[in-house]
Length: 161
Image (cartoon, one colour):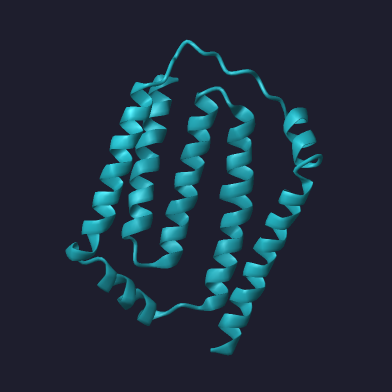
C-alpha cells in the first residue's frame, strides 16, 4: 500500500505539471482528470474510501465533463494556443515560483508540527449526507446554481463571437 501511495503521488505531481505546461487545452483537461483520479487513489490508500469515491465521481467525473463541454462550446483555436505559449516565458515563472516556495515552506512547517498519535474519528456516508441535505442544503444548492450560471455565461460568451 505504501508503494501505491507514492506511485499515485508521483503521477499526481507529474500530471499536474503537465496541466500547467500544456498549451492544448483539451490535453490539459485530460491531464487534470488523471491528476484528480490519482488524488482519489491517495485518499483510498489513506483509509478514506468515501472521500476517494467523491473525488472520482464528483470532480473527475461531473465537473471535468462540464469543463470539457464548455471548452468544446467555446471552440478555442490557434490564437489561444499561441497566447498560452507566450505566457510560458521564463520571466513569467518568477512570481509563481516565489509564491510556490512560500507555500512549500509553510507546508513543511505545518507537517513538522503535526501530532501523529491522534486517530481521526470515522465519518460515514449517512453523516455526510445528513449534513449536506440538512443544515448545509442551502450552500449545496447555491453551489449548483453557481455552476449553472457559469455554464450559461460561457454559452453566451461563445455565442457572441
